[in-house]
Structures are given as structure tokens and as C-alpha cells.
Length: 316
Image (cartoon, rainbow, N blue to C red; front, side, top):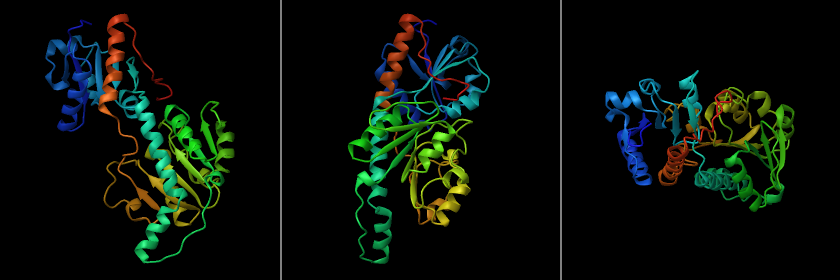
């Protein structure tokens, strides 16, 4: 690929978001010509080998017959992998330390929200009631994290700093400082049985879809609480609703849903035991993300090596 061949930014985002990304990417790599997909001419489409993407239209990617590599500006790529199907494309997802720090901040904030009974006190205010609950020490509130990648590792460190006992589960065995780790389906059951606040940070794959079904939600201790900052379909929605209705789960903080934006008539909006967030737990910082994309592309220009980090069979 010629060093002067434009690199398209392929996205189904709104025009303002596309313009913002183009500005950040151009600032991070002024030596490259970064343009919107629609600006590519026929000859450029025929020769394009690398594209930067954010929820791209797969039909547009198919119009780039020589495309070898797509670099996503998102950490989550399950939608991209699903859209591409069987493909020889190499995919790089964003691995940004800033994103991990932002997620760790959100996990700590909303864990404290549940730990300090803020939903209860919000309901008390609405009812004009004055009744403090007994204080529970952080050391007495066990937090379990599903997913021990970069985000889970950062979240575990933040929770440990706040004195919570932390457990973690991953597909394959991991070792983290001061974290009791589990793996496999037996390990998942063991961790769930001990978890007072469950934090989901897993990627969405065929193996994790509906992982938290009625049977696994029932493994949690009575009055356990839940935070989902991963993907909506990892939790079986009706099973979650029934567990909340029955009081088996005390509260759920949901930042992700199968359909986004969450439709106005969806049940979580009005459920007294649910806090709805608009997929805001860990937004991508376009500045740091663009710098990482730029570094990977410069390395490619210099060596021909592609920083692919997505296993298409696993889906992430």
C-alpha cells in the first residue's frame, strides 16, 4: 500500500460523530490522509488495504476488495466480527489504558452506590421517610467480577484499594494480586455463590450470550446486587426481571441493553430495583484512542506488521 493512499474512516455514526473522529485521527497522524469512506474515489477503493472503523456498514467494507486490515476505535468488536462473518480480514480492537482507568472509576463509583444503599435512600426521599440503615464495612461486602481482561484487572485494583474483598472469573485461569480467581463453569458457580455485588465486564460471544440465565442468577446469595457494564445479551432479560420482582436480587445497575437506545416502553425504565444508564460507563476518549491507532499504523508503515489482536473464532 502506498504511503500516500488515503485511509478511510468507515462508520455508521451520525455526521457530527464522524467529523469529530476525523478531526482527532488527522491530528494524531498528520502524515496520513484520513478521509470519510464516502470521499474515496473508485481507484482508491480498489487499492485500499487498511481502514479505521467504528461500527462500520459491512456493505461498505465489501466495496474495498484489497482490504486486509481494519482497526476499530472501539474496545468491543463483537458486532464487527458478527457482521463480517467468515473473513480473512485482520482486526485490531482498541486497547487503551485510559479506557481501563475510566471503567475502573465507573465500577468503583457504582459499586459504592450499591454498597452505601443509595437506591434505598433515594426511595426514602421520595416517600419523605427518615430511617438510616446499619452501616456495612467494605471488608464485609464481597465483589465478584466477570471478565479479567484489561478492564477487569483495572476494576479489581480499584475495588481492592477501596477495601472490598474481590473475586474474579475468566474463561481461562488468571492470577491477579489480592484477587481470588476462578475459571470454567464450576469456578463460575463457586464465585457466584459468594458474591454480594456482581460486576459484568465480559465480551459478548457465543459462549457468554445469556451466560447469566435464571439458573446462574439463582446461584447468587439472597439480596445480591448486579452491575452490567458489558453487553446487554449476556444477561437473560426475563430471568433478571423475575429475580428482581421476586426480591431475590436487590438492585441492578444496567448500562447496556440488547436494544440501544433503550425503548421508552421498556420495563427497566420504571422498575424500582433498576438504575438505567445510557451506555456511559466508559466512553472512548477520541484523543487517546486516535494516538493508539496512529502508533499502530506507523508501525505497519515501517515494518509491514499488523497489530491484529482479535481472534475471530472467540469473537474478541
